[in-house]
Length: 162
Length: 113
Image (cartoon, rainbow over the protein chains, first blue to last red):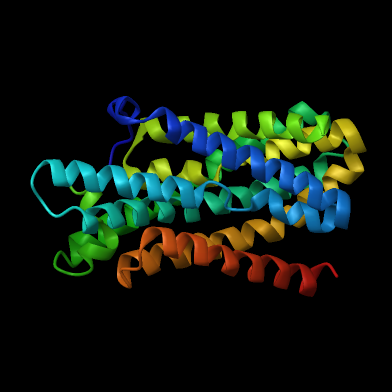
């Protein structure tokens, strides 16, 4: 499946959706700092991978997809839930990138310049996340080709079907 | 107070930036990758280096490794809950946060304590 930039999603976005993500992100960053101050960096560090915006994002995606379907005259709850599930499955793949990110920052930060380490680690995060996503796409395509009637619901959700 | 406000602004801005990128991309499974962007970690680690030093931030990154494993478990499990068990999105994502806490602190207890 080809990766596309689509600005239509942005046009449908409401200002409060961005405000919600900003607030969640800010709150978790502040919370992680407070935890580290109170209990030390060993415990505070855990919260650097806290799923901060997943509930807010998934809920907004579900709502938006559901409304889109209902405007077209169909029942939209199922599609909304499927869209949210696919988005969260993507986040799970991105999680492997987070593991790679921390595996770079942890040993290299004391020795290298901070902006360099963070930039390289962010690049590696994307590379790992993208590679896993791409691998899954290839595997799903092959499985579909061999067994076209099997697992289509699992492998390709309604939102990603053409 | 000034420090907390600073963290809220920096963290909020970085998280919003990554979610904006995710908003622009299709298919949805690819856009979802940005739900696991290192947004909170970038903001927190940069601030930790400035305030507490590199060694402190490095310890945070080591713990983040365990938090990341908990994140993968969280996202994989709630995705299945929604897709196969037809659980409500808000219920799955918020109940799942408990699962993240259990996994993250469980791993911390076993590996680092």
